[in-house]
Length: 317
Image 1 (cartoon, helix red, strand yellow):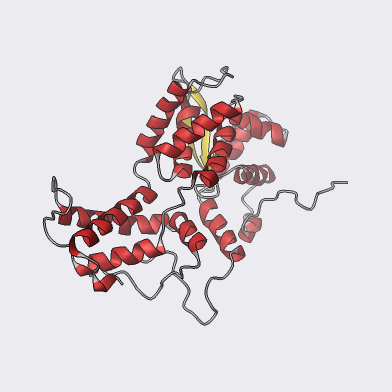
Image 2 (image 1 turned 45 degrees about the horizontal axis):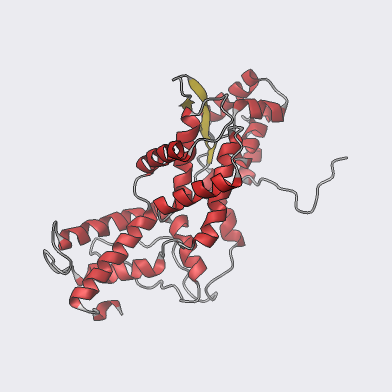
């Protein structure tokens, strides 16, 4: 008889999946295993087909057939990666519905931060055509953890707002102007909207004492998936390199994993020297582009520059 501990891991799927009669048992089980290994924020999974075959007790051909069916059903997306010799290495998976489902599960567990009679904070406030952001949802100062988590949870919607604001601030500052010089004074609506956005969507904490363990854990998972053992001291140096390269290191690790796994030779079991690791990291930074946390810090800098020149605007207080 199967005995499960009180803290045994589990994977929750939407109830609607039980009614998908076109999914065969093997396909359903393969989907569950992929979801178990998928990133909760991106839906990406780096499990190998031979690992899937071993876990399910099936051949690689059977696993390929399951993957093909799941892809045809729209429940899975795949991307081929290449090894160092230009040949196919393994499939990189993405579960399209996984980030939204995980966010739903988290919202059910999250503690309420407003009274039942209050209007709940919207996941992302949109920048209106009149350059105004709805101002009826302010975050209480006693909720910093909620503010930091909200950046990542609502980043797809906030990104559009932030990009537009950055363009308007850049237009007001102008090119080549010294600090304190402006092409024109920013509109009060832009100043007010930026102030409220930064209150509502604070960048993640830059406290390395809390970020470093998470980054090291992610890096260790990347190397373990390739069968590579990295000494703790070397892993710590790699983690510090990642942290120093970006204000928001955890999303960058997704691109770093892709870069490493796409070129890493299967037979290599030794950790790369730091110089080679930095090559992977720089390539990942190019792929990742500018993070939302960096953009928010840019807006904060522009707002500080405004106040240094024009003083504290009453509209933002």
